[in-house]
Image 1 (cartoon, one colour):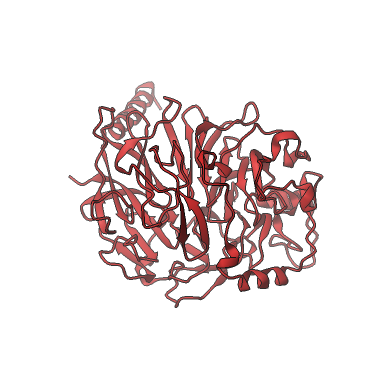
Image 2: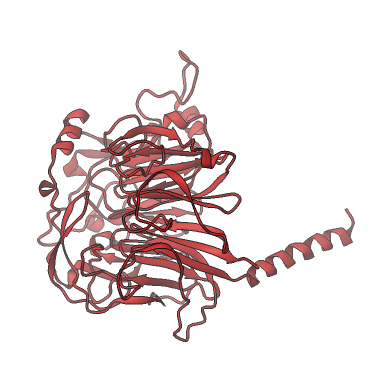
Length: 524
C-alpha cells in the first residue's frame, strides 16, 4: 500500500473517532426510583433523564452503571463525572445505610426501621432528611474522569481514568486497610487484614473457619454435608435470617475513599454485589473484599468480612471442580497444566449477583462462586461454592458476557445466544416456565422473539433481566412490580419481550435492583 493510502486510512479512522466524540447520547430510565417524581409512582415506560443543571460541564452521557436499591448512576461524557440520583425512601424499598455521606451524597438522620424484602428481613437505619431527586455529580475526592462504576444494595464503587478505585456506602463494604496478604501466592492474613470492630459478631479470620493456604489454593474444611447445609438453609424462616448490622450511628456508613491495592495494580473494571465487591486488573487478576459468608469472594472459606482487597485465585488448578476432566475423552489423563490451559490464562470479565459472583476467562470459560441455594452458580446443584469453579456444562460454549441477579444468572455466548440459570420465582430466567421453578444448570433461552437475534449486552436487576442485541433492540423479562421491564405495565413476564425504543438508538442497558437505565443515541 502506498504512503498516501496509509495516510488516507489514518485520516478516516481519526474522522470516525471525532464524529463519535461529537455524538450526544441520551439517558432513559424506568422502574422504581423513589424521590425522582413527586408522586413516587413507578415508571412503567422509558422516561428521559435530564442532565444536571448546576453549572457543571455536563452536556451528554457517556455510560450507564445501573445503580442499587432506589438510586441510579451514570457517567457524563465530557468530564467523566459520576452522576447519581434517587433516594432511600420512607417506604423502606431501598435500604441505603447512610451517614453524613450517603450513597447518593446527601445528609441523613438516623432511626431504626424494619425493611421487609422477599429474601430477608433487615434491621437498618436511614430515615432521610434530604432526597436526591435530580441527577447531580457525586462529590468524589478526585477530579479524575470516572471510567466505570457499580452499585450493590447500599454501597458503590468506581474506577478512574488513572485506574484508582473509590468506594463508599455501607461501612462493611468499604476496605479499612491496605492488603497485607495474597491468597494466590500462599499468603495468610496478618494484622489488620480482617477488621475487628467492637460489638461486631460478623467478622472471622480464615483460620477460625478452618482454612489455610496450600500451594496457591485455599483449602476449606467443612464437616457439614452439602445436602444438610442446603436443607438447613431451605427451612430457615425469614425471621431466622435477620441480619445483625452495627449500631445505628455514624459508624454505619463510610464516605468515598480510595481503595489501596498492591503497588503496580491497575484496576480497569469493578462489580458490586449485595455486600461484596470485585475489581479486575489490567493483567486479568481479580481482587475482592466485603462480605464473603457464602463464598462469594472465592477465597475457599466462609469468612464473613474481608476488610482488605485480596487476590482471588480464579485460575487455580481446582477451578475445574471435583473430578472434572474439562471435556477430555473418557479414560484420558489430564494434567494440572492442561486444565489450567483449558481454563485460560487470565480473567477478562467480572460480575456480581446478590451473594454470588461470576468471571469469564480469556478462553470464554465461565467460573462461578458463592451462594448456590437456587442454583445460581449453574453447577447442577444448590450448594454454596467457596472458590471459583468452572461451569462444566458450558465448556464447549465460549461465553462472552455474564450478569448476576439476586437469585439468578444470565450469560451470553459468542454466537449471541442467551443462557440462564438459578431461581425463576418471577420468570427472570425467561424460559416461559412458571414460578418457583429452579434451574441448577444453564438453559438456553429459545424464545421465538430472540430467533436470529445476536445478544451483545446483558444486565440483571434483583429479579429481572435485560439484554441488548446487535441490531440495538432491548428485551426484558422477569419481575415487573415496579415497571422495571419498561413495557408500560406492572405484569411479570416469563418470556423475553421487546422494550419499545423507536424514538432512539440503544447503545447500552444496565439494570438497578428495581429499575433499568438505557443509554441511547437520538434518531435523526
